[in-house]
Structure formats: structure tokens, C-alpha cells
Length: 224
Image 1 (tube, rainbow, N blue to C red):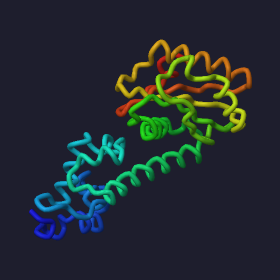
Image 2 (image 1 turned 90 degrees about the vertical axis):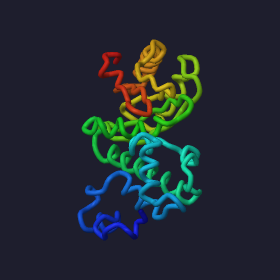
Image 3 (image 1 turned 120 degrees about the vertical axis):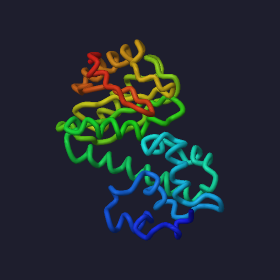
Image 4 (image 1 turned 135 degrees about the vertical axis):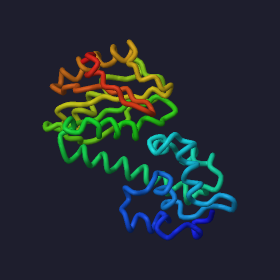
């Protein structure tokens, strides 16, 4: 069925204007972004294909422009628009963390880290630098590759903490394998960085292990 053949109040744009965005399904919201389909596949079907292929909106938010090439009919312009929405989501979450103490919004921290690190194909070690009120100053990706005590240099982390004049940090790294359980190497690295940062009076508040589907707090597991 073509969109023009749908009843007026069932078309995504008209439905949103009449009943609000919350009344639309994930596929309908995506259809509004995509605007048009291709021969044999209307825009609602394309939206549903995106949802099905990437495991819902959460999965879609962790895709790259390259991943989106798998969907027939998504040209460069449409891929760019979807990736732009992802970046807006990242910036909105970052603003939340800059406007209020980090741990008043623990889910926002997890969401932010998943958007930043969850879909990376290789390991990234990042640090959230916080002010004295635990608000976000900056997130920096400091190391990449296979992360061990020897490949993450405490001196560099300390220097960046001093440059930001921060009072505390949250450490984070991703597991591209999808296994969110911290390893013994993760535990050892956390303790090494905790000791190094303590020398300059910077606290390590947490260390998150991030995958596409979750961000696990090592503090909650008792490792800090």
C-alpha cells in the first residue's frame, strides 16, 4: 500500500501533528526522517526494515553510515540524516551531564557511554573528566586497540586530568565482543589508575565496561 492510499489520520506526519510523537511507532518515526521510499518499498516498509535489521531503535542508534549501506534505498543523503540524528542524541545526553551532577542521572551516563563507545569495532579507552560538583567537563578517548595495563599509560591519564583541573573521573572502555563482564585485566588497570590519580588528588568514581546493549559499572560490582 502506498502512503497516499492510507487514511489521512494514519499517515505518519498527520498522525504526529494530530496526536503527538508518542503515538507513532518506531517505523513511523523513521519514515518521517526518510520521507520517501523506493519502487516496491514504501517509506513505512523501509522504516520497519531498519527496525528489524538493527534490532530496534536502540540497535539502530549504534550503527554507522557504513552499516546503513546494507539497506537498499538508503542513499548517502538519508544515511547522513540518520547519523546526524545519532549525533544529536549524543549531544543531548552530553548536555544533560554537563548541566547536573553526573550521578543524579545514572541512566543518562550509561546511555551516553553506549552511544559513544558501544558500536566501536575496536577497543577504546575513554575518560569522563568531572568538576568538583561531578558535572561533565569533557569526554576524551585516550587509547585504542587491545587494552592492557601496559597499553593504557597512567601518566597520560594524569596529565589530561591536570589539564582539565578536574576533581574526579569516570573511566570507560568498550568490549566489542559483547561480553560486559569486567576481566581481571580490567580490575588491575582500574586499581593502577586509581592509585596514580590519587597522587594528584583526583578520585576515580567508576569504571564502565560498555557493549552495544549495556554499560556495566565496576563500582556497583564492588571493584572500586
